[in-house]
Image (cartoon, rainbow, N blue to C red; front, top):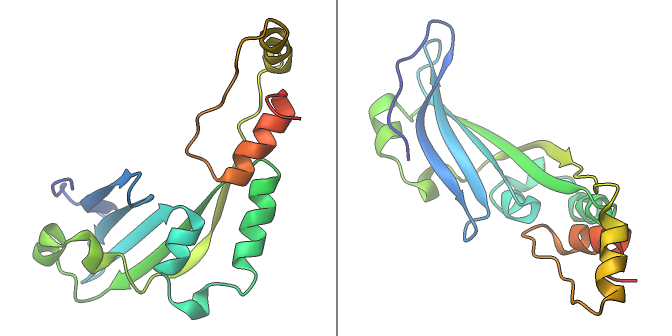
Length: 157
């Protein structure tokens, strides 16, 4: 995690940062403002992981199906969540552990990103296949996103 920053007037300061890891599949920050006593926790990451850290009543019943549909269209999907903790004062926020703050979150929404193929990509893949050169894709994206991209560029048919 990162150290505390000077708190700008009327602004936000990141008190603690929990970096993204492939093990956790998420990242979060603990943020303070001058106006409030406690701290905000903001969380983003793999939708199924974020949903599991949220209060059930904040996650729509069709959440998994929506994520699957978006991923199947080739979109990268991140879920975002938030929690305000009045008891998480500055000194407690600086010393907090990931598991202690990434809990009881409220799902805020989904962040969608599209990485479009370069126009020359399908032709290059065809050329590699014609030359009998193996072609594969390595990604950390959702499996359905990877399949969609592989279909679009011709790695799989």
